Image (cartoon, rainbow, N blue to C red; front, side, top):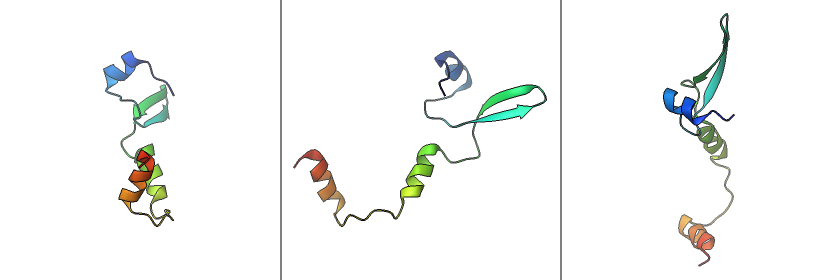
Length: 67
């Protein structure tokens, strides 16, 4: 969801911040999430223990650098 920069600045939202939709008797509100881990953290946690490459970090980095 794209939130205009003026709104993000006023409410301290940064690109990538998680938000929640809250519905109450006054209507729908968008609030910064404080209860859930960020999307990035959830993705990283879902990948833990899934690696099947028997290379060291240095070997992988050398490959990505074209060495």
